[in-house]
Amino acid sequence: MLLHAPKNGFFFVIDRESGEFISAKPIAGVNWATHYDETGRPVETPNADFRDGSRFIRPSPYGAHSWPPMSLHPKTGLVYLPVVDMGYVYGGDPEWKFQQGSWNTGLDMSVFETFGETEGENVESWGAYLLAWDPVRQREVWRHTHRTGFNGGTLSVGEDLLFEGSADGRFVAYRATDGKQLWESPVGTGAMAGPVTYEVDGEQYVAIAAGWGGSFGLSGGEAALLAGVRGGGRVLAWKLGGTAVVPPGKPPLGPVPAPAVRVAASEKELRRGSVLYHTQCSACHGPGAIGGGSAVPDLRYLDERQHGLFAETVLKGLHEPAGMPRFDDLLSTDDVRQIQAYVLQQAAKGHAAESAN
Image: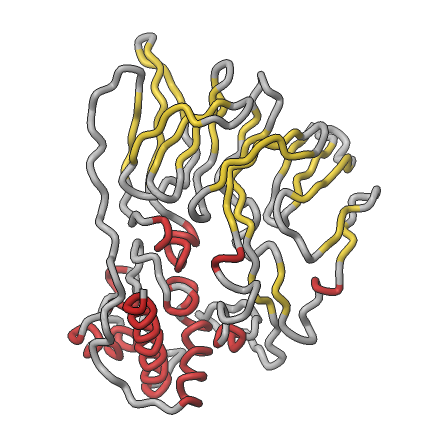
């Protein structure tokens, strides 16, 4: 048998020799299809077609399960995988045209002007968990709820052991049969990769390459902030009886400061700044200008000096050696002013929300 959990929210069982479809059941919230029929084709809902308007669809483009590896335990017969139960606003832009060098999704980015302000479209409406799945009975056996999304791949070993790293900076051992936590160690950063085990001179080790990467490391947004740890790569290994102390990671960013400067902009310009930001910037800096503060900066924390260099950074490639490309072929000076005004507006909202708590 071939066992597969792709991004679309279903867990598939397929005959690995013939490719024949056997079954598919949802492992997270799915509203683009009701089920798969006996021929292996999805039975789609009207929600799957967003050509005539925006739809809030589950799963999000990040996927219910993405690249972090799942594992099959030979003793329990269960599959263990990290799941992100999250939706996304999909809406086609009827005026979209391919633009070389741009983030060409074809989506209408104006939907993000109010993203998070409607019930069912905010970070509180999603969840993440380590799932133990029975591929024969196609059902959940147990789950362990995580603090935020984008947790690590799994490793199944021994008689009844399961290892997984978490986005909030832990490496954990579980009892594979029922999910009871047996042990954990801090890692000082997020842990997304799958662990490995190896033996040296008869002594067994378990190791993980810790650190954020992929879409979460860039645009993790509120999910990354909820993790409570920042990025930074490291390789860590453990053994029974080990006494070494894991070095601490980078400290959290802390409260969003009051905006450092002011940029004059009308409501219309702020709306356009939002669309431009989500079209050109959000892939790295996060939806709503809320970044994880890891691989790339959370723009709401820019100080007065950095805002003074905003146009030079975006248009002239001031930080190009560090990976921030120049956008003078895609944006004008006025475009950049409107983007900056939008970022400052989001900084003000973030500061006000935290000051009220």
